Amino acid sequence: MAGYFSYAYSVVPFSPSLERTALGGVRGVADRPVHLVRSGEVAAAVSPVPEADFSQAALKAHLEDLDWLEPTARAHHSVVESLAVHTTVLPLRLATVYLDDTRVAQMLEAGRETFAGLLARLTGHAEWGVKVYVERPASAAVPPADAAPALEEPDPGRAYLRQRRHQHHARRDAWRTAEEVLRRIDAEVQGLAAQRARHRPQQGRLADTGGENVANDAYLVPHELAEEFRRRVRRAAEDAPGVRVDITGPWAPYSFAEPGVQEPGLQEGAAPG
Image (spheres, one colour):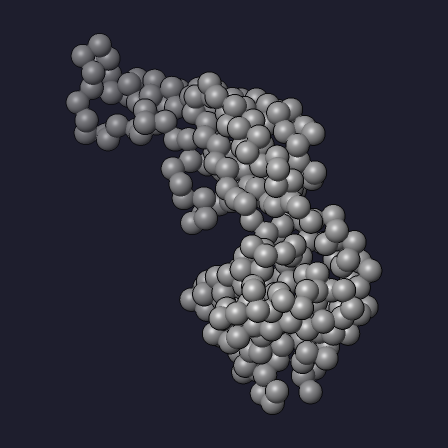
């Protein structure tokens, strides 16, 4: 298609009905319809995207522009999740772009055995996220300098130092509790999760949830064990003052999609043409 590249979302096991059941009416990045490109028993979900926005030079600029990146990421994940409702998915990285569908087919052919093996490993599983936060205690706020000192503490300077020591001790105790919660979680989910992936704790706007994110893990869990997994993680967080554990999912297995195959496309530096 002149003026368009092929944007690939995920690799899936090929099924003749999948395009109709999972992708009927689904719009992807740049609001374009999604279709399958097949190679043997595997296929890739693909949509055309305009060359003007997805050339190497354009992507370099766009990936630093949150106003462009956020809706693009939402569209990408929407396609992957639509497929995940119906089949096993092997998500590809955001902005995985090829010159055309022929290049997508070549990528599938080159990695067919690897993709088939990964899809077999992921079948029947979903990703669950577990985030551990050290919460900010209500008593952590430092009183303003012009606040009246407590009757039992006539020296405002001493009152301030006492408050700071209290904050320090509360934070230290919460971190120790968080470490214990992490040990409990590891023990509780032993034998339930097929794999675990450690991610960098979230910071800045992503972590603005009233606490400090100290652990950001993903677990690959069989569907039939998901409820037991959630119950055990919640149990590990009981009696843990100052610590909050958030469980999210089920998700497509983004953290466990590691094709390990060179993908011949624009991301390798190929010039459009």
